[in-house]
Image (cartoon, rainbow, N blue to C red; front, side, top):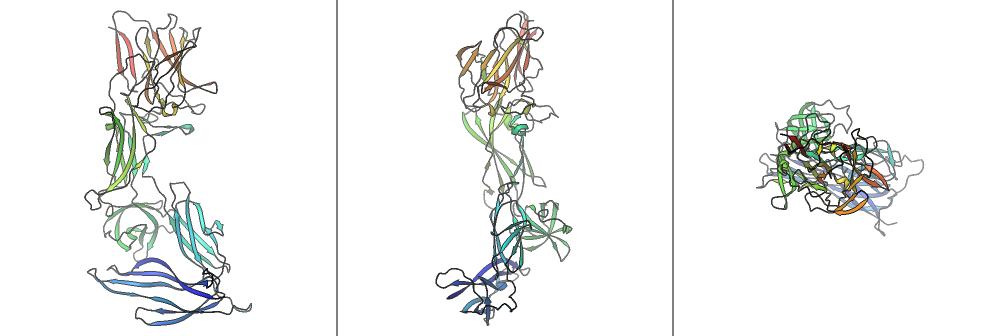
Length: 593
């Protein structure tokens, strides 16, 4: 078989060699053997390759290498150097050159010969895909290794063994790859896999049982979006042997960071603000904390670092998209907030959201169900980072949009409430687990009072989870002992037509005493007000009202049953009062003068 040989360069990170910034380029140089006919890699079978090395002084050395396998490493070190003077000018350059001279067949060893030592080497590990989010476990790496004894097997973190050099479904952080060749030779390599971390660490939403999420907030409580600044990755913490302090290895170029700068790092092993003592190389800083992390795992010594020198005047931009009722058009406004020393940014947008609402009653009390867009609104959020990069407008990253909208009500929750300023207790869900308390009606009274002859409605949240359901209100008159009166139950259908808050109303049906009557009944996202029909019979002293929907001919309840007292103490001296309560609903009552 005719053989050809070529040189393969596996480049290493450059090395800083002096304080003037002089650099050394490093590489591993191997001889690879190919079939002259097919051009494909082939086993050298102990062929003899003659090659030359021309050094910095143009002195040529001729050497030979015996290649038993596919590749054979002939050099690992500096192949070029650029030297700078104190003024930053290049004062000299130098390089090594490798050339193939010839390839001749070799003599494979006999069984009694001492075998050649293993040349196993992991030349590189490439991250094909970073972890998309914390806990996603979807990263992928590919290991590149050579040896004069094939095949090569691979281990990940000493646990996973594979004949393939590709590892999938990995978590972020540091991992150790071990390669084992056919002779038993072993080589190790440590790689850091970055995790795409969401800058948004919390929002006004509340997680509820059954996987439900309430995105409804009270406008007169703080509505806060919290972000964690994460400029760059910390891939490792190491001992700085010169002073026993800590080296911080990053995934960025820190050559512009100066001694005395303050940086913030956060890893499981080390967290805080520290002073930069020196730059070890273009990706490594030495900070003023003694190295005491030798017993920590590689994962404990990885995290993130914030460097004001590289991202000066850092701030978070929170863009709010909303429907402007004054102009009748979609609009946006941006909130700008700066982080604290730990990189935490809190954007409280409640003051602006209050401006989307107003204390007004626009109902004419003609519809069975009224969506009150004075007292509720929706908005969407996108966020981005910004810092001064020396340009006129600075650098703004791409905005990241939160897919689902948020909602706000003209309401105020008391301090210490279970859900803070979130309206979770009032948000109905169609799939709430059994035993979980149903959504409350929006009223400040445990038992509101209704007066015959006066318009009266009860407020409730028509949540996004109700879209597409045939929601109806069941009203049951009660006697003085709170027992149901004989006769038909009134069911008022309030189905949603798929519209969104602040869009046009739809039409639905009223089912009254088992007779189908078509009436306009809008049922859309936001605060809705159910108009209670009346008057009630003289023997009705109370009534219960509940929201339900039918699923496979089975009634499903989505709100708590609200009992309303029927007040008959009405005369010519009475006055009719309307106001907006703390929970955000319109309230009505009749009082004596």
